[in-house]
Image (tube, rainbow over all chains, first blue to last red; front, side, top):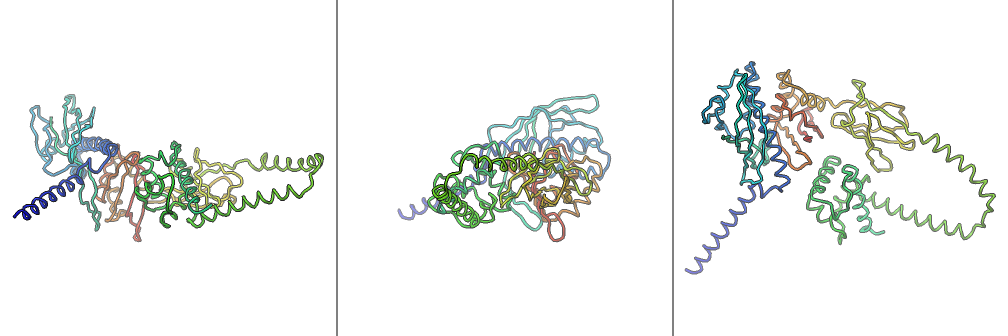
Length: 177
Length: 305
C-alpha cells in the first residue's frame, strides 16, 4: 500500500513538473530576452498603426474590389474573426464585431490616427497590453479616445505552401476604452 | 606554430572580419556580447550560407584557451569567413608565412656575417636610383583609380546602399567604401567582387577596365523593391504580378531592427503587404532572394530599417 502511494505521488509530481516546463516553453518570457521582447513590442506599434491605416483607407475607398482586399489585409493581422472593436461611430461606450464596424464606416470618410502609443513593461504569459490615444475625425468632428489593446504573441504552426513550421507571431486582439 | 596556435590566429582574424561589418566593436572575444554573437551568426549565414549555433561560438570562440581543436567542418566555415578557401589553406598560409619569415631572418644573418661592408659612397650611389624608382612608383603609379558602378540597363549610377564591393587579393576579402556610386582602387589591386540583392553578382579584373563597371539588375528583386516603395496605385497589377512570381511555398523572414527578432510571412501575407503598402513597407530592404527551377521566388530575407 505504502509503495503504491509513493509511486502515485511520484507520478503526480513528475506530471506537475512536466506540465510546468511545457507551459514555460510556450510563454513569452520563457523564450525571449527582455531586449527581444522590446523589439517585438516596437513591432506591435507598427502593427496597430497599420490596422488604423487600413480602416481609414477602407472608410474612404469607393472601389469595391479594393475594399475586399483591405478587409483581407485587416483579417490577417487580427487574432480572430470574433474580433470586437469599440463602436467609434457612436458616443456611447459599446463594442461591436469587426464586420459590423466595417459596415458602419464604409464610405463615411473617417480618419483614424494613433498617437502617444505606450508599450508596457509587464508581460503576461502570451500577450501584453498597448495603450494609445486614437484621434477619430469625420469632416470637422474630431474626438480622441484613450484605448487599451491586447497584443497576442504566441507560437503557431504556420503553412508555407506544402511546408509548415512553428513560428512566433504577433496578432492584434481586443480593444477597450 | 602548431594547429592550436593557428586556431588562436583564426579567432583573431574572425574578430577582424567581424569588425569590417561592425566597426564599432573594438573589443576581444572576452567582451564579445550575445548581440555580437547573433550578428556574427547572421553574417556567416548571409555571406557563406552556412549555419553556426550560438552554443558552438560560446564553446569554441569565446574561451581564451582551447583544449581541443573544433570540428573540421566548422574550421572550414570560419576559414572561409576570414577569406581562406578552407582550414587547410589557412594552416598552410600560416605555416608558409612563418617558414618564410624564419628563412628570411636566417639568410639576412648569414649575409651580414659573410659580406664585407660597403663604403658610404657606394651606398649613396646605390641609393639614388632606388629613390628615383620609389618616386616614380608612389608619385605616378600609386594614383588611385576611380570607378563608377552603373546599372547595365538604365546606364544610371547605382545608389551606394544598394551594393557592396569587395577587393579580393590572395583569398583575402576586404570591403571597399562606396561614395557617390564610385570606388577608389589601388593600382596594385586586381580583382573586385560586386554583391547586391538587386543586381547579379559580378567578379571583375580591374586591370581590364577604365572608369565604369556595368552590373545587370536582378529583375525580381528590383520588382519587389519598386512594389515596396509604391503607393496604392496599380494595386491590381501588383497582385497579378506577385501571384506569378511568388512560389506557393514562399517563406519571407523580416528581421527586426538589430536582428532582435523576426517575422515569418507566407505568400498570402507577404503579397498583402505589397498590394496595399503602408508607411512601414517602405522601411524594408531585401537582403537575399532565392528562386526555384520554375523561376519563382521561394525565399526572401528582408531587413527592417
